[in-house]
Length: 215
Image 1 (cartoon, one colour):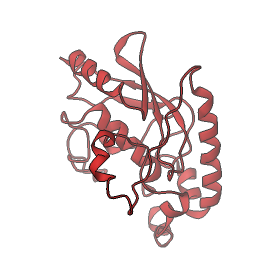
Image 2: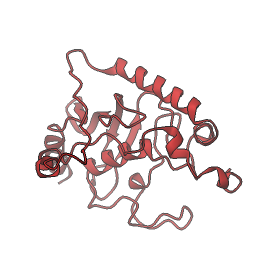
Image 3: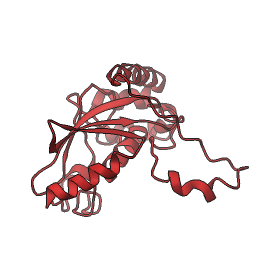
């Protein structure tokens, strides 16, 4: 059953412009993934972030494994590229972490849901429990330096763009003066490129008062 589900999901995602996917050695359980950040307001805009996804044989009852292949500076990304994100955690409530079952993996989740959550996480860092403590501290205390490091990561990621691959254009922002935007938005409603946060400074706003409690 898992291979049929994954084949259908792969076919659907292959049509999206915010992700570039291929099978690793034609194995439906091993995907080569690249997340493409199309939101011009994102600090990670223009990045081509390669990753690997490995699926268990009992998918979708257990979550896939996801790992960025190139170092990416972010509070919730470990140095080896693994993520600290609830949606990839095994199903059920976790009293220790405080995560509810609704936040964690469930068979109702799909690959697209995971990838969209990861794109959103890039600009919505959870600094209260960082996987990369240094990145969390830098984001909170020196957003300008954090932004410079991230921009360097974005530029480095472009080295992984395959020869002949054309990066898609960014998604235009809706304008308050454009009454037709939402009427025409159905065709593009699945285009994602990160959250609406624009800089590290915006993500860090309001956190300074909690430094002693978190670190």
